[in-house]
Length: 228
Ligand code: HEM
Ligand SMILES: *[C@@H]1O[C@H](CO)[C@@H](O)[C@H](O)[C@H]1NC(C)=O
Ligand SMILES: *[C@@H]1O[C@H](CO)[C@@H](O)[C@H](O)[C@H]1NC(C)=O
Ligand SMILES: *[C@@H]1O[C@H](CO)[C@@H](O)[C@H](O)[C@H]1NC(C)=O
Ligand SMILES: *[C@@H]1O[C@H](CO)[C@@H](O)[C@H](O)[C@H]1NC(C)=O
Ligand SMILES: *[C@@H]1O[C@H](CO)[C@@H](O)[C@H](O)[C@H]1NC(C)=O
Ligand SMILES: *[C@@H]1O[C@H](CO)[C@@H](O)[C@H](O)[C@H]1NC(C)=O
Image (cartoon, rainbow, N blue to C red; front, side, top):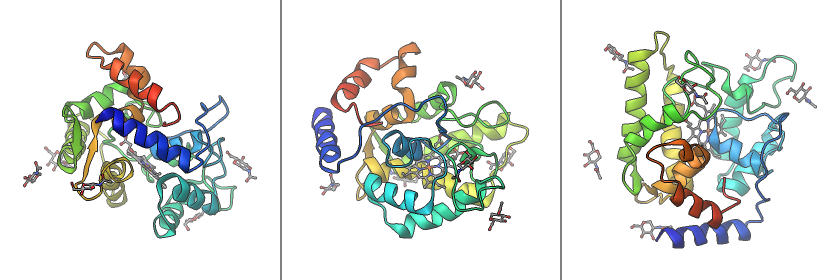
């Protein structure tokens, strides 16, 4: 089943002419959103991760994740508010998206709260809490919600500056289902766990974990070298 899934994704990527994955360079901006980071790594968004216009985002979301402008334009309008003065509000950067408490928020699935450290980068400690709720072969809407609830409980209990604005609550909910919609089955609300975990960035970190399931990730990596 997993093999079949891998091959299906390879076929989908090949047929959509998605440019190959290339690692971000030292001057390329990346941020708290694994979805947009992926689109930039594939060059569907500017590989620099900077000066992303509405046309850029609409193109990338259309080709990359089959979403039309009823989704990409409202998201662009929010994203552009993270743009520091000087760019005239017509573009945003992937890193400025991570400015705390505009869109970026506490209680993320794979990032620490800004209070504790760099909220822009994948953090294994934070993601391990999420994996506690994702021990089955598939993630359901329920287990995704459980991970989100766990992150909120953890942040509320440990972060003296914990907060979630109404905008953040909306985003946090959307982020918890985005990967089900993109990688999974929209009808059942179910997605295979391993590609999602791989996508979040555990592929490299998993080698350092005592509970490593790196063989599985390695297999996925070979099957789908252009995926993330
Ligand atoms: C390509 C489709 C997209 C997918 C699959 C996606 C998925 C995700 C996921 C799963 C997270 C949660 C990360 C975590 O909690 O550790 C996230 C975070 C985020 N996304 Fe996206 N996203 C997409 C597009 C966008 C767009 C268009 C925006 C523009 C506003 C955006 C802004 C953000 C921000 C600011 C965060 C950080 C929130 C936080 O954890 O503090 N994303 N995204
Ligand atoms: C692109 O974004 C950078 C900030 O990352 C800014 O300094 C530069 O002026 C922008 N370039 C254009 C053409 O808007
Ligand atoms: C960007 O747009 C927002 C909302 O429309 C506005 O509040 C802000 O002042 C603008 N910033 C710049 C630098 O133009
Ligand atoms: C991840 O977060 C933990 C806990 O806040 C911190 O100790 C660790 O340094 C972070 N790791 C990275 C790679 O940032
Ligand atoms: C998901 O959670 C809801 C509410 O707790 C529960 O009614 C439902 O049976 C759960 N579904 C599955 C498939 O576990
Ligand atoms: C945070 O914890 C407090 C005290 O236990 C509780 O009253 C509050 O509802 C919690 N907030 C969230 C968002 O879970
Ligand atoms: C999603 O699940 C439904 C119900 O099990 C199934 O009929 C459908 O073929 C699945 N869709 C995909 C794309 O796998």
